[in-house]
Length: 494
Ligand code: HEM
Image 1 (tube, protein in one colour):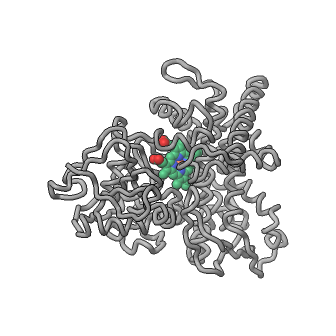
Image 2 (cartoon, rainbow, N blue to C red):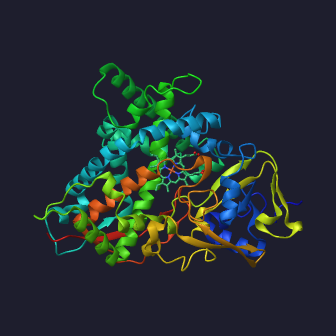
Image 3 (cartoon, rainbow, N blue to C red):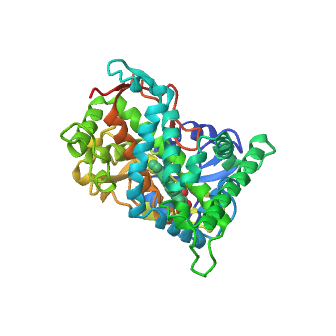
């Protein structure tokens, strides 16, 4: 057994930081052609072993707890922002229980209650945001711009706070204190914080102050609710209050506060980035905008021209809407790579990445392993015309059983692997929400939030792009569109 091949680099310590940071997918692709599907590169002194393709994702995302650890990889980033005692600042079995409590808060009943709230927030936004003056003036002839990222970030935080976070958070969203705290926390949730958890910089101090203030803010809400004993809310706070771990320890006020911060951060950038890419793709392809609109008309328009409200059950059964979200997450997943710290040597079986015995690799303890679902999702060995945004590719049974043909590279040579199925498993070539024990629990909520935002927008406006489709920016926590990213809209004539 030997170590995986190491990517050549000129500058020690720094390693391949620039190539990886600027365009991780192009970097993975070129390394894969040279070194095969398993290779190591140096990133600011760390050894990152990339395992490309569905087999690689399986190795990383399906890895044993004794071999790979997410908390060791992420805690430096997340604990100062979320707070102590939750997520990656507790033993994994604790976090798994916390995920169960959160799932409980994402019940069918709660999700059903959210649809109306989300469409109301989006409709309100169109009725007061300065970018939508032409909409309010009922001008259905001229086109006006809106800034995509700014718009989707606001819509995401407004809708998440109105639903998951609860009415107290929603009522503070517009306050300067809350926005400043949120901005300070967010300023400490950047790629630099992964590499350097603590630096004597003002942004780190602001992050720490904001964490404390945010935690106190949530604890205050909990105490008020306990004192008031008002009517049962459908939000996450109500679901988490009164929960206890299996060993009988109750979920403390701080645990709940920190879980709410974690949910705010986990859902905000991922959902707003996805909504941005979706709106940009729809604007780039106005015929898809029309298909989305017609789908709304068919399902929700009354004979007198008024709209019937969206419902959760119906929203799940709209094939055009569903395929637009699904396809955008394939081509523009917000998270491009997922990593874990290696806790004990991992033997890569010879048949996994290469057929020959001399390719049996050991990924040693102390390395990080990295999977890239984003790379698998545009792999030409798997998908037809992979870089084309084509929602129709999901037409057969909404993609649930879409076949892919899996092949892998062995040091530049193509090796056929056989047929597979797009599934929720760790070996699927489609994993925008990850897979395995750390899989996202926000998927249903995200589909609901994004779907409702999109449906509400296409009912009201037409969209088009007047500049080239934006390139991805990989320097941020989630992959965002580079500037310019404006969409031209026009009010739909009644
Ligand atoms: C985990 C993506 C929205 C909460 C993950 C992971 C991915 C992901 C790829 C796996 C990370 C890993 O294995 O290291 C997304 C995308 C979203 C989205 C693409 C939207 C389009 C949300 C929302 C919430 C949320 C709205 C909360 C309501 C979580 C949580 C985890 C997670 C709690 C678990 C982390 C773990 O177990 O380590 N998400 N997410 N996500 N996500 Fe999401």
